Length: 81
Image (cartoon, rainbow, N blue to C red):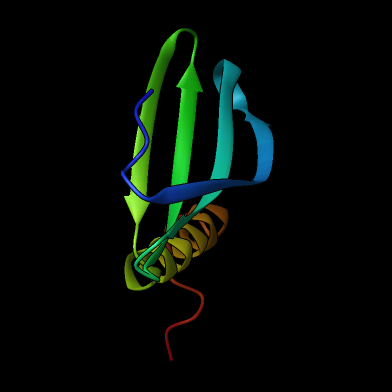
């Protein structure tokens, strides 16, 4: 797997997800000072990688939390006023 030029990859954490998937979070530190987060999803021999900037990672975190709140409430947003 090719890494971006000038990037140092730092392993952050891994977890086993439902249906045999493995999730790995990595930090990418570039020589230029740019930082990104990488989400790797392994499904058998197949890999999906998402490289995210800080704003996109924050959005994804909130969207996933919202999805779980909605699923747990039967589809009703319990945070709306």
